[in-house]
View: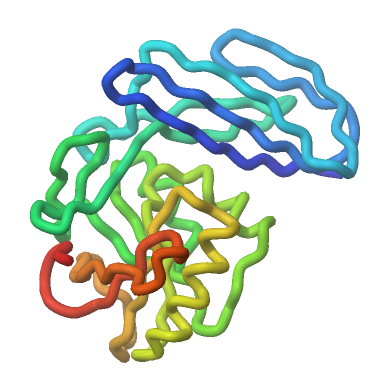
Amino acid sequence: MESRVKFFTQVDNEAGIASLAVFLYGEGCVKLSFQGEERVVELSKERRREDYFILNTHLWNGKKDPNLYSFYVDDREYRFGLRTFGLDKNKGFFLNGEHYALDSTNTLITDDISVLDKCDEEGIVTAFLFPSGHMPGEDEIALLSSHPSVCFWGYRVEEKEEEMRKLNSILYSLDKTRATIGVFEERDSFLPVFDLSVVNEKNGEEKGVVALREGDGFKL
């Protein structure tokens, strides 16, 4: 049975260090290789977790420096990037603690999984849009979550804010590292430019960020 891999990273920008948790799913014995270290582990039906500590981190920094790390399971290469991002109500989008303006040259909204490797390599900040009404499962999120370019999950929900909030809560339960956006307007193709406003969750217990497509830039 082929193994499945999900990466979860935590980055300390000031200290230049990061922790890497690798979750493996499958059965059988596999060899893990990362930065010169090799481990042989036995997979079972239960999820297996392997932890690594990364010193002197080289961040994935958008188009400025889209660095990727390579992790091997047997002979198969998986690539991932280290990065943090945030949204400020006055200043907009921040990448690795620094303001990073999003425009048509460095941002993409897409529903095409085949372009994500290229987005990783070229430093394109991406929102991945799921089909309307589709709820991804853990397998699908695991496949997508290794892409550092994907900073947002998205849905085309046609002005149903209640639905958007419900989807956001479910997505947050699967992946707590990304915000959720909703695209509400009808059009034939997705625009390659972010045009979003961040909306605070009304219920303090809700997690994540819901963004509506109205106005320009990231504003609260």
